[in-house]
Image 1: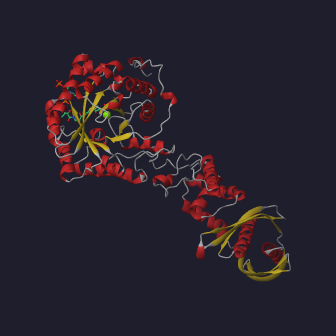
Image 2: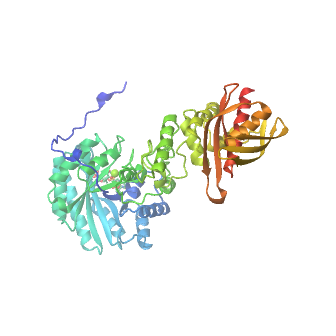
Image 3: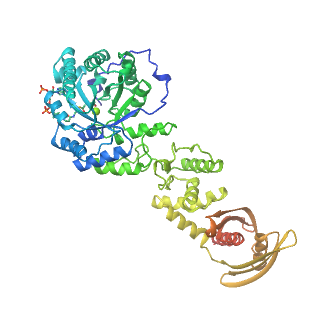
Length: 554
Ligand SMILES: CC(=O)SCCNC(=O)CCNC(=O)[C@H](O)C(C)(C)COP(=O)(O)OP(=O)(O)OC[C@H]1O[C@@H](n2cnc3c(N)ncnc32)[C@H](O)[C@@H]1OP(=O)(O)O
Ligand SMILES: CC(C)C(=O)C(=O)O
Ligand SMILES: [Mg+2]
C-alpha cells in the first residue's frame, strides 16, 4: 500500500477576498521563453551552441520578444553562445534577451562581461525563499535570506551603472510556492526599495511555482494576493513561472493570468526541470481557440515540433495538446460520425466560425491540413468510412449507402487492424466500380420521346454474350432497366438515387449512386458509376448494382 502518511498537506492561503474566479482571460500576456535556460538546464544533453542558435531563431520566428538565453556565468558554452549572438548581431532591436544569475558577485560580474554590446538586457536574479530551503539549504532566517536578495540587487545596480545599454531587473523569490506570502511580499518589497522602479522603468517580479505543490486555485490565490499587496503596483510587471509537477501547470498559468499576472515564463512543449515548465504553446493555443490573439506566430506547429525535437532530443507525445500526431484524429465511430456531420454542416452553412464536434480548432489553422482527422480501425463506424471517401477521394456516399460499405471495411479492420484510406478506396473500386460480371455495360444511346418518355438503345454483355436491345421508359434509368428485363428477365426497382459532380472544369466527372431492389429475391444493394457524362454515370451505377445483386445471389 502507498505510504501516504509520509506526506503532509501543503498549507494554502486563506483568501476569501479572491476576485479571479469571476474573471476571464481577455488578452495575451507578455511571453518570455525560457527554453534556452530552464529548458536547456533540464536536458540529458544540453544544447550545443549551434542547437541553441537554431532554437533562438525559432523563438524569434514565433514572435517572442523576451527570451531568457541562458545562465552565462554558469559555463563556457552558455557564455560563448551569448557572445555568438552579440558578435553575429543576431538580437533584433525589438527583442529583449534575459540572463539568469545567482545573487553572488563573481557570477554577476561574469554575467555583465557576457552581455557587453547588447542594447537591452533583463538581468534576472533569484534566491530561494521557501521555508524548506531556508532551513535545509541555506540555514538562514528570513532577514538573512532577504539580505541575499538585497545584496544581489545592489550588485546589479553597481554593474549596471557602467553598462552602456539598458538593464531591466527581474527578481524571483525562487520556490515562491513554498514561501509564506507575507515573507515573499517583504522580500520583493526590499528589492523594489533597493532598485527604485518607476512606471516607466518597471521591475519584473517573477513568482515561480518552482515546484508545483498544490491545486492551481491555490497558486492563483497567492498571485492575486501578491498583486493586490505590492506597493506601487504600476511600477511592477508581475511575472509567473509555473512548473508542472502535478500536471496542472497550464491550469495554474491560466488562473494566475486571471489573478493579475502580466507576464508568463515558460517553454515550448513544456520542456524543463522534472515534469517541465509550463508549455507556452498550449497556453497560447488555448487563447487562440477562444478567439483571442495569442500574439505569437503559431501557424506551423509541425515545424516547431521538428526543430524542438532535433534541438532538445525529446519527442513530442502523440497526445500533446495541439501538437501531438493523434490529437486531431478520431478512430471511434461516434466521434467520426459527428465530425463528418459537423464538417459538412460547416461547409453547407458557409460559416466563418469553426464549430465541429470533437475538434476544438481547425487543424489546418495550425498547419496540419494534410493529416488525417479520421482513421479507420475496428472501433470506427459508417460515418468515418464515409468521411474518408469524401475527404480523400471526393465520393459523397449517400447516407443509405454508408452502412453497406462500412460493413465491408469493418470486416477487413477486424482481421487486419487499421485500414488505410488507399485500401478503403481500392476496396470501394473493387466492390462498386470495377465489377463487370455477369453484366458489362458497353454503350447506350438515350433520346427523349415526347414530354415524358425516354428511348434507350443499349448494348451490354451478359455472361460473356453481347446483347443489343431497345426499350422505352420514363427516363434514362427506367428505359435501361426495362431493356435489361426484356433480355434477362431480371425485374428491379430503384429505391434510392443520388449524383454529384467530382472535380472542376474539363476534368469534372459525375458520380452516381443507385440502390436497386431485385423484386424476385427481395435483395437490395447499391451500385456506383463514374463518368464524364452524367447519364453514362447513372447507367454504369445500374450495372454496378446488378452485378452486386448477382454476387449476393451466388
Ligand atoms: C530553480 C532554478 O532553476 S534555479 C537555476 C538553476 N540553474 C543552474 O543551477 C544551472 C547553472 N548553475 C551552475 O552552473 C552552478 O550552480 C553555478 C555556476 C551557478 C554555481 O556553481 P557553484 O558555486 O560551483 O555551485 P553551487 O551552485 O552548488 O553553489 C552553491 C552555493 O551557492 C549558494 N547559492 C545558491 N543559490 C544562490 C543564489 N540564488 N544566490 C546566492 N547564493 C546562492 C548556496 O547557498 C551555496 O552556498 P555555500 O557554498 O555557502 O553552501
Ligand atoms: C530561476 C527560477 C525563476 C526558476 O527557474 C524557478 O523558480 O523555477
Ligand atoms: Mg524554473
